[in-house]
Structures are given as structure tokens and as C-alpha cells.
Length: 283
Image (cartoon, rainbow, N blue to C red; front, side, top):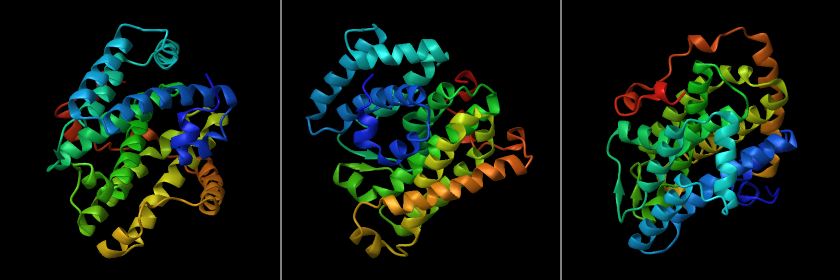
């Protein structure tokens, strides 16, 4: 695996947090991200829909047939074997990405939004938790929550860009954007206490990633109205803000020590997702 990966090129916030991981763990997380990014790039590129469908089917077939001359696929199967990642979770991820390969996308229900967010990001949170050696069931559910929260943040940030690409996950309405960020807040909160189940040497990086990504939502709320939101372009967290959020993450680390709250007490908001996808079978 190369240290110059898709993670360092595309995912600046995650790459920042990855600085606090041991190198070998970072490389394994990077291999997972590379697999997700290669699949996602097929859905996001400018090819005609028919060509995308053919390329995506070829990628899926190469994955399931273990085409190990592709290092991205070989590394992913290495992670599946080493960390006992259920194939159903990978299948959910690929289903989510595949759902983006159509001319126009319109999600009208909260249930559809949450299922989509689970598929394209909750799955990644779950697989990442496996790599970080999290095994307790409720903690793995919280890892799904963190992935969903981050995806809801993404969707809230990219409404205009997504609409330009024929994708409407939520409406271009500031009240709806705000409510989506508030929904994300619920999932961010539910993700917190499970972080104490991560081995100590890996814990801080996840706290940093959580804080830096959550900051994007706060910056969106600070736009106050749709006009300011639209004028701001792509909202991101500056390096100075990342430093500040990293310092706040030190307080989170202390809080995890001081507050004795079990992850078993968390009421995970998975009811709508479980109507269609049995998450217990994935963890």
C-alpha cells in the first residue's frame, strides 16, 4: 500500500485525523478508503450513465471474483480476512454507490435518506471500527452512527453541487438543510461514548475526525439563510480551525475518562433503517 493514497488526495479532514494513527493502522484505513473511493469515482465521473453501469458492474465482478492483480481489490480482501468484515456490509456499500448511477435522484423520505447514508457511509464507519479493533455490538452500532452523521453533513454541505449533478437527497431549502444537520447531531452524539472502546493509541484520531467533520455543520448553520449558504461555495474547515478542533479533542479524550457512561445506554436511531436492512446481521 502506498502512503500517497486517495485518502491524502481527496479526504483532507480524514487525512488530518489519520496523522494521529500508528502508521500501519493508517495504511489499513487508507486501503479501505481507496476501495470506497475507486467505486465512488465510477458513480461520480462524467461518463454517460450506461458506461458507468458497465464499469461499476465490472468493478463489482472483479471484487467478488477476487481479481487480485488489482491492488485495490487485493488489499480490500486482505482487510475482510484480517478483521472479519462481513461481506453483507461491503455489499451494502456497493448497493449505495450503485443507487447513485442514474440520471436523476430524488429522495423524499427521511427513511430513504437514512438508508442511503447507512449504505454509503455507515458501512464505512462499521468497517473502520473493525480495523480499529472494536468488537462490542453496541460500539459497532455507534460506529455506524458516526458514518451516518458524516454523510448527513456531506449532504447538507453539497446540496447545490448535488442538484447540478441531478441528485436531490434533500431540498435546496435552508430549513431542511438545518434539520438535516440537527439530525446529524443526534448521530454524532450517539457515536461519542463508543470511542472509549477503541484501543487508546487509536482513540484520539477518531475524536479528531469526529470534531473536524462536525465543524462543517456548525459552519453551515452560521450562514443563517439560503442566500449566504449559496454564496459561500463549498464549505470546509481551514487548517487553523482543524488545529483548534484538535485541541478540543483533547478535552473529549479527558471527558471519556471522567464520565462513566456505558455505550449500552445509547438508544440508537436505527428503527427506519432496520425496516429494510437488518443491522444486527451486519455486526
